Image (cartoon, rainbow, N blue to C red; front, side, top):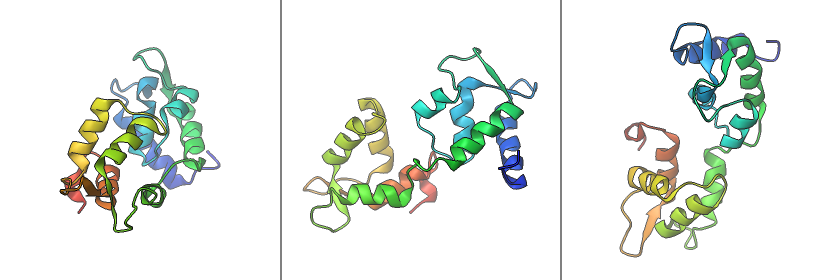
Length: 158
């Protein structure tokens, strides 16, 4: 693939091989988002569906040569948010400019903006990634973002 560096192709092959459960050099399109996320990308669910991801297992298989252009396209996509983007967004809710926001506002943002989450998903995220609310209902949002972006291993982030 001309627009991917050799190291990117190698990383993509490795991630692809992890999701090749049957050893047939194919990945079920149901796992397309998982493979991309394993490569430190954050595609939206809509993007995954647009690129051929499936909501039901065993409907479509992808070969590596079909996956590499998808990886390249998602890698180039500039619509993915990063740490700085999330910090800027949550600063809008920091009325005292002290690094805190109301936990209820964070919950509302997660429920209503962007790719909306279910109430259960929001409750799980808040329980896993938020510090305890202070007596006024505020939480430090920087630590929340760091824990959230750390993925399933929040203990590795302060």
